[in-house]
Amino acid sequence: MTSTPHHPDLRSQLETLTTEAFRPELAEIDRMPTLDIARVMNGEDTAVPAAVAERLPEIAAAVDAIAARMARGGRLVYAGAGTAGRLGVLDASECPPTFNTAPGQVVGLIAGGPDAMVTSVEGAEDSAELARADLDALGLTADDAVVGVSASGRTPYAIGAVEHARARGALTVGLACNSGSALAAAAEHGIEVVTGPELITGSTRLKAGTAQKLVLNMLSTITMIRLGKTYGNLMVDVRASNEKLRARSRRIVALATGAADDEIERALTATGGEVKHAILTLLADVDGPTAARLLEDSGGHLRAALAAAKG
Image 1 (cartoon, rainbow, N blue to C red):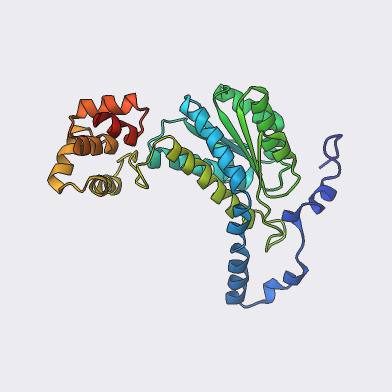
Image 2: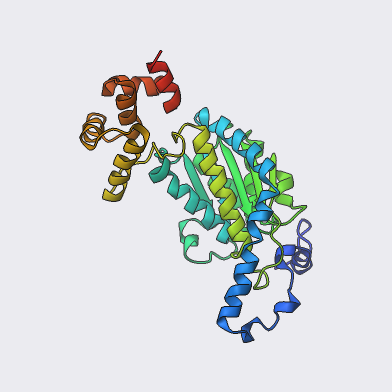
């Protein structure tokens, strides 16, 4: 890669990143017995939750800001390259079946597009312009929240996404695994989970990727809790799209209400399989249309709808 005014020699840049640091004590790992390698790797991984724990206040602040935007109809958009991008796409793709989010409500953008999920798209991560184009294609608004994800914290695609989103008035979060990162500095909410040098030098799909997965789990899950997508710790907005999820729906209604199986079946039938509505009909003794109205009036928050039903 040639040097530019903005990016001095990349090799010297990488040498300053803890995620790229060389571990001389592991220089002969390829000569160790397999079980010993597994033990070392497992030991490395145990440090990741502690690194995340140090950033919980920043994560919580980001969640509250994201939830406030989404409550106004905004979207949660992840943007990253390589492993970071794939993790964002994964998290986004799991929100509709888990929380019944609308299509496009949580979006994962990966440098190079869908092909980059399974193959390396040459040069895509180095393009801030590509990030801007991807966000413009979404019609970004000030109600949206954009989370740039990059282990190094210097990936132009992630930084470009955050800078462009911020210029549009959207909420911005920068998730990196090095301190003093350009990505965190560019975002309104910087989250730097410093996981240290990797077992295999520079392989940030390992500890850094695990840390990113944990943080993205928190950002989406706790945001959905704040938006009323759960009742206690029950997935009351689950979409029953297959037999396993239909069985889970019946179990969730049973746990929430203690009702008999035949009552649960009647409630789910009367509400078109909507778990929240079924629970409300059973706990508040109202019919399906009334449950739907109460939930609409409460913005989908089951606890608030129950309180309103009981007057």
